Image (cartoon, rainbow, N blue to C red; front, side):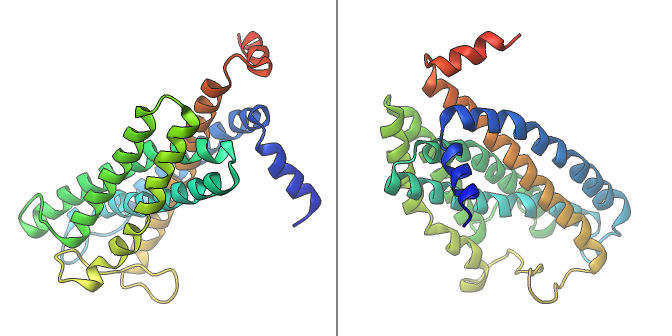
Length: 250
């Protein structure tokens, strides 16, 4: 790793530097997500043909699958940040970990809601205690547990460490969710999209899906930076650099 990159990482750990970094890049991340969302949804709703078995109801996949992937990705990232914070006592990682929780919970709610909407015409019911659905619901409870624990303790650093420990323990659920359709009999369909190898989806359906996947990634990055910046400012309120920036704000 170059000395310049190491220096940049050290600078990023500074509350004042991170505030400037997040203020600069969060809007760009949001902006980058918009054309991806727009083009992806247009492709998904107007260009991709109806599925030969599921008809037009399959189109909810373009919201459901990216949200499901994000619900797992965000929890894993939250656990990683929490582990770094616990081992090296890096305050910024505590802030980033806790900023992940509400965003990941929102993606999990979207996953469960769209799964129910998709399940009704396919399975004939809004909900079934299917292994994939049940473990995804447990993931939501873990997110809510992290959020609740972080909010229940007045000391922000102690709260972040306690909630982060729950995130680290909860990460064992992620492979269970991922392989639940393989390990148990499940109504949920198996894997149809593969990063390596041939996907079982028609090639015309894959482009809009990846557009939506990248759109959610950029949206998440913008949301993470914005939420972390707000928490960082709350923790640093009263510091000279915060007062200086507040004075410059019109």
